[in-house]
Amino acid sequence: MSDGSHWMHRVSPGATLRWTVLFIGGLIMITPLLYMFSSSLKPGADIYDLRLIPARATLDNYRAVLSDGRFMRWFLNSTFIATCVTLSTLFFDSLVGYTLAKFRFRGRQLVFIAILSTLMIPTEMLVIPWYLLSAQLGWIDSYWGIMFPGMMTGFGTFLMKQFFETVPDDFLEAARIDGLSEFAIWWRVAMPLVTPALSALAIFAFLGNWTAFFWPLIVTTSQELYTLPIGLSSFAVEAAIKWEMIMTGAALATIPTLIVFLVLQRYIVRGVMLAGLKG
Amino acid sequence: MTAETHEQPGRRGLTLARRQALWAWAFLALPVVFYVLIRFYPTAQAFWLSLTDWDLMSKPEFIGLENYRQMLADPVFWKVFKNTFLYLIIGTPLSLLMSFAIAYYLDKTRFLHGFLRALYFVPYITTAAAMAWVWRWFYQPAPTGLINDLLGSFGFAQIPFLKSTTWALPSILVTAIWAGLGFQIIIFLAGLRAIPTTYYEAARIDGLGEGAILRRITLPLLKPTMVFLVVFSSIGFLRIFDQVYNMTSNDPGGPLNSTKPLVLMIYQTAFSSYDMGYAAAQTVVLFTILLIVSLLQLWVMRDRA
Image (cartoon, rainbow over all chains, first blue to last red; front, side, top):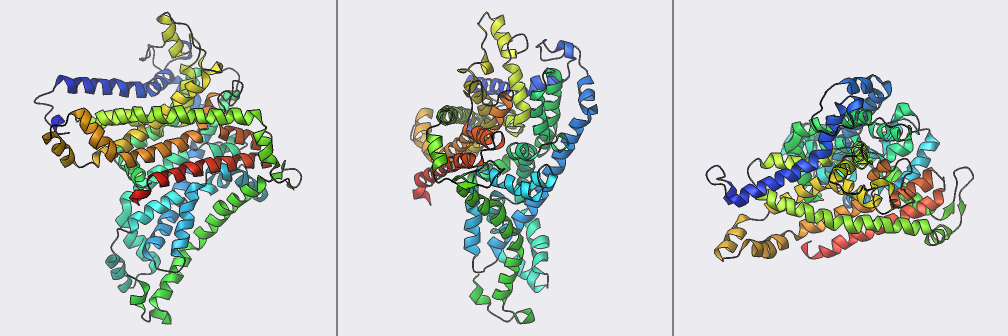
């Protein structure tokens, strides 16, 4: 660690080699993304030209994909669903986490252990009962059907509880003396104190729901209700694959997460570390 | 603060403890209903369904352990079982070795550290369904596929990646490892950074070389990180689905079931064959395997609690 801090003054050959190897490895990691964007900019006739920089760059593929109503619909479906589920997760996971961290009442430990134990239950085990429930209540092929299983999460509750425990009781007590209701104490006093955890949870929830595949695949049947990943995978059924179109669709599905990543990189990396170390 | 110390009459004649309990349950009411209806009841239902024969049309019929007996006698199940463990046995050590090596050297690198880290991390945030298409395209025969095109131009034989029963599983595994590597690198970086620099300084004063420091200080202190990542990535490979489904979607799990993992078998048994009882029994098997892996973690880490 200390040897790298003066890299401008003395760079050892070993450090240069290490950096070069790491850089080449990093380029290999993003090669699939580079080729995806490159092909999405190539006219159909040039798809077999495997040079990374398109000889003739065009946005025609993007125009074609976006003017096909289905893709736009899937994009909006994914955005709507991921946003709703994220908001619900943020609200309920932090409410439950706060209650378990800051209230003393009989049954608290039981509720906490019960919620924590749901982390052990794999989604795959629940999808058949969820499907039956959805069939009985008419939730198949509806937004609510896609969203309901993720409205609250054991992981988020656990994360938020850990963070609310660091909030000093004096703050809450002072607000109580000021006559704030318990709901207002949570919402207006405690919540602003845990924004780093909330932002980490928001990013996880959004990315997780944006890329979710298994349950949406099961619960959607009509094209209008597909999320973007399901829509992309449905192209396989169509006989002749136009690779440049598929790459454009894949690129459009990737661009929002890339933007989220570039803007919030610091929070995402810190959030992953946080989740990994607490988990 | 315990409830007893605040046992004073509050507003509306309630003690503070009583008032707190009321608020707590008011906040928890909806979540408790959710967890019972959407998590616990379905879990119990899955166990019960695994003991029934049910095609969704008629009523479920109780058949005891017949689904489990059928599973043990089903050659497809054993093929799938073997595939799932192949993903795990190759995927976990390989991805951990690679991510540790990258994180170890990345940690020593200051110049454009954030940029390098971003290059490795970006694949982790992509959508499997989207990136599966890119990888499928890479794996196509020449002239479409990039890899076969390169092989051809160097005079090597073509590889029928996703069309061959021997090549398809490793080809998908590469995609899965690629997608998960960034997460593991970040966790390793966090673990490496948590080791106090004074340990390293003391070791250098004692005249230990880089190799000895790695063996005697870094690796032992990274044990919790390693255990977490082994478990996390094992669970990930045992539950592999998105990459397999999306890279073989003309014939999911093919060719000839050579890439089919347990979760894909569950999906097809339930939602292609509508054999709900048999599918539920398969989910119980998956649950049991995942539980054993998680309990192993608790056991390995028991002296740290």
